[in-house]
Length: 173
Image (cartoon, rainbow, N blue to C red):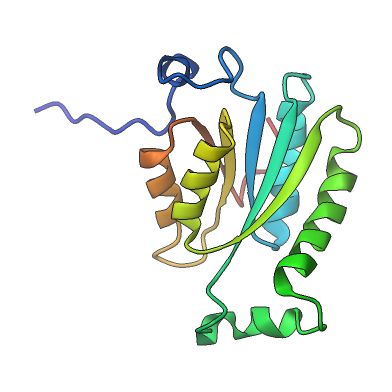
């Protein structure tokens, strides 16, 4: 029996066929999954090399905050980083805005910072649909055996292109 692998990326034609408003250009609107780690700069470097062709008009940076009403031990450090009297979403938005302003200043694109609460996979898919993005750019880390599950889910469920950038990637495309 021949083995058939599931597609990792929808083609631009599939995206157009599904009625996306960015017909013809998969970089018209780009969503970057930000997580406040060194990976953000890595994704920004890859994004700017792709966006420098001038096809993009809008870039969204999305950061998903875990549920702060029931903090788990694994996110206590995150809480401690932002105990400055400023609401967490505002602090995160401010940090990402500074980083993205600096990283995108050479390009003629507008950008928005979105900070939402919830599960990464669900929020990324939802935001990609709401913002009608042509491409989602996300990082893939090699931290543990379970790492990459969000990326695999995104590859199956997104109705747009997906660029997964491994943390070991050495230089932009």
